[in-house]
Image (cartoon, rainbow, N blue to C red; front, side, top):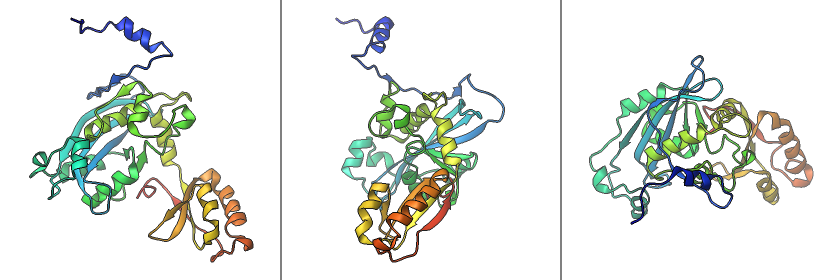
Length: 295
């Protein structure tokens, strides 16, 4: 019989090898972290939702939150207990959702989110964070309209993971694996803990991912709406990073404050010049902050 006890020296050898990669199961506990400063701290709520799908008619079936307290350097100093609620959508959940999450119709029957408790937690924090903030915010406000107008940050988009040496995409499990951890994906509580672990990770810059995310999220940015752009310049806009908004029928891109002037010059020369045959004199430019960026 193989001895079930794993020798830590073997694990150390694996971790020090270029030929193998070791992943440890993520465990996040309610506790003080015993690092960081005690003065000037702030609170954030990390949130995740599981839903019946990604369409307009889809709804939340699981909502999880956990508060973290962090210092001015972006170091997490304490982690609150997890909060989670299941909610009956009033219909059978799709088979693929049940298979992905492990949530069953029987578990959901008669369950509901504690609205008062959820709003209390959300309002106790400086901002809310999720790994795909635009999606989670949309689902949350559809269920809890009183949660509109909160400040949001996104651990997926407000951290430049590639610049910090992370390979490939920005999915939660993939990023987590690159810091040597794995988690029980596709349940809201587990995904919240995965985000907390990522935010606490130290980057090559010497800062935490949380520090970078908060700095990016707090900074104002500018949304360029390329109204009246001719059809023939769509490839230029795509290459520049613009996305098509089907509802407004216009191309949009958000840039940081420092890049605003460069974007104005590019649009003037590529989209609103006479040769491009625009149907407007110029773009609509809107200032965006972290209360409206992902709304």
